[in-house]
Length: 265
Figure 1 (tube, rainbow, N blue to C red):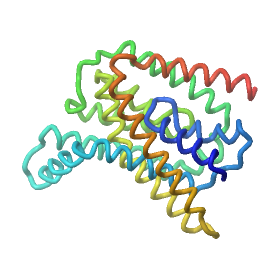
Figure 2: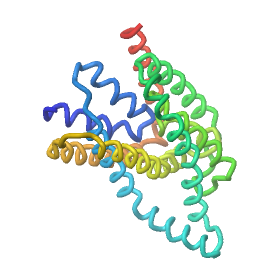
Figure 3: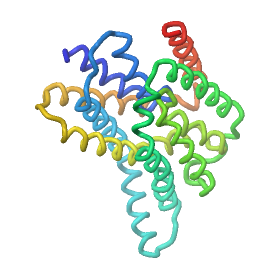
Figure 4: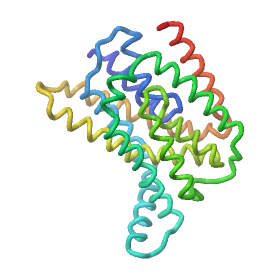
């Protein structure tokens, strides 16, 4: 991999992981559209480590408070709002974790095509627009009920299909449950931490079994680039979200999906 490919793919991962436009779709499409060779499993692991580091660093204070409250709840000190949010992240992750273990092979073999990505990009983009337009947007993430957590966690399972967007589908479900845009985004980002850690762990196990060495310079550059771009993306997305809404991302998804249909049909 040359430096242009490394930086481009790392920026794509960092900027699209937390926007509702699907990072997996873009990482599949960039090599297809540019003619680059597949970047390989080691690089995928490296950029996911970068985005995981970014979200943990950005929410470090919230994570510390939630962890203390969660441990307190285990000790019988009651469910504070922060403890409930911590449990919401735990339980919201379980459906995707189980589905990933059971369906990863099927998805890898049959659903990584540009036409599938085009269909999910358009379809779930329209669903995001509907949720943003019709949602009440009155609640924050600390008001999540167990029903909300179940619905958002089940929706996150759909993100295993390329083009859906993990952040997009969880924000869609959150908005449909009446969360504000910022609350839906914050809960989505917190949900990304265990999901990304689990996915990265599974990919690392696969990587260990592969023969040959790794290009550590490329991996380091990819990790740092993905981390920096993801951190900035989270920061500005949360600042601008209430002002701009989801419509710009819906329009982008529709343009991208229609473009893919013209290219690959």
